[in-house]
Image (cartoon, rainbow, N blue to C red):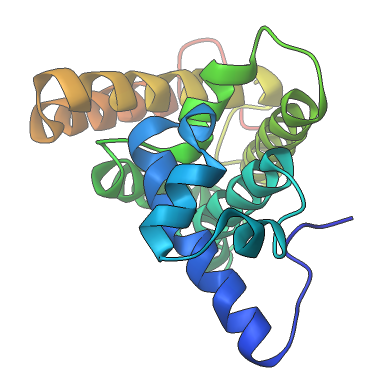
Length: 209
């Protein structure tokens, strides 16, 4: 069941306020950095008041993770869906993903969670895997549409290209924090264009059908 299930009235407003504060903390400290006690102090409530909206620390972490996913989709995926299927949509996704990294270069809840829970078991690990797998499938779908359009070579493996694009974005997250966003952005976009060129029907030894 979604931890972002709608509530009503003042309770819903309070819950959203708590969640916004928790999200800000998670950007800085990760999901593991969330504490009911410190969050209660931050929002001027008692621990029991926070627990009334989130039954456990894990429920709170899951809600923050879902909020991060929703914001990512709102900023990256959904606007790109307004463009035609294929390469135009793929470029839009990558461009908006770059913008997302710029906004969250000091800390991305989704990316941090992948590092926090990759070697663990449990509900949070499973939620992260589900999110990341769903996004990888979305990227595969977009790549496949570009292949079907003849914009990418027919022998391209969609899962492989989706993996390589994701790897570029991981590199952007890494380098933006260490070496500055502008330089990292330049390198990543150049690498993305080189990757697309290598996958084009015009590339050596490939035919468009």
